[in-house]
Length: 444
Image 1: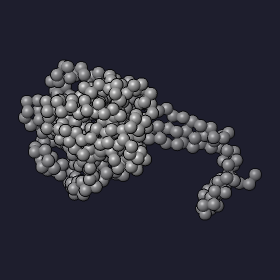
Image 2: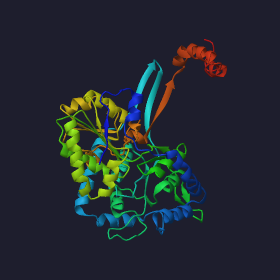
Image 3: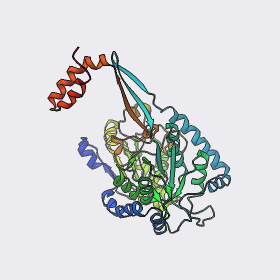
Image 4: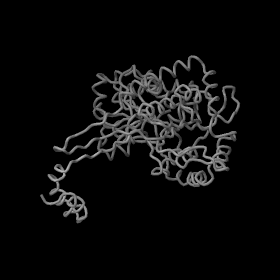
């Protein structure tokens, strides 16, 4: 069901490992060309284009793009009490973690009379995307909204594609659980728009045919989505800031002979049920564990609720059981893979996990499965995929903040450093830079 990749005795250099580790092949650049005319249409025609595109891709034409506030509160009133309680606890834990991420302004005295202060200023307006498609993700509402609120963002808009109501019918509104999550968080600006067109709406804003503005443009867009959402983010980056070009979900597990194959198989299947392109990778130095985990997958996958999706993911080129010589070699493999989610199931798992350099989030030991992080750990589940964890972080309060340096020098402090400014201006051939300082400092 899942292929085996034997890297025992193989070169462990970064180049060799990056070529060897399993990875989904996604041609985002090709997708950019497919979404370019769509994004241009939204820029030019606004709301009529968004309605046409929603009808084309989602099979329904909403009465209005913006969801009425009363519909949000009605969805909350109809929410299953157990789901409401779970969302409230998820929100509470996420707030605890993200509140502690808020940065404080710092002032450094560089010289007597000369200071530099780094101020942390929240982005003014953000657009948060919550995908639909194969599943419903109220948890993604929580994971996007909470850090933005804790950062102090003043204006928050959410977009999610129209989905079925709880009875399976179509209303042109996002899924009721998405609407209820927005209501729980106090978000009243929700749009029934999905896909690349939602990103274009956030980037350009959208006017109706009468010239009235339905959606104001945003400064930053965050949230996961399919390849077309990623392509729109790439295309429109610069007009808007983005968190990342999130691809299909992925899990890597680093395990030795102490690991429980039942746990490993359950966690691998839990990620595989997200998407047929989900990347599922087990890295181990124990052949017996590899055999037993593969056998568990063979038993459990056909019985999964989304069996076809799970089996497609496990059979894909992006998934494998990888054999290594030892855990040190396994650490090199998982660092090269740079997984969105990394579980560590080894003896002294905390010590091994502390040596990991590249992962979106690390889950340590048998009682910290990825699904805990998806919902209620308090951590954020919007994480870098496709190897981007080598250079990027998951969504956090910091995503929504900008550092601004504020420079305050008095005359004496400027005079004391002026000769260094003159020397560097001469070295760079920019005499006007020197003159801008010299004009302020008449000869003593």
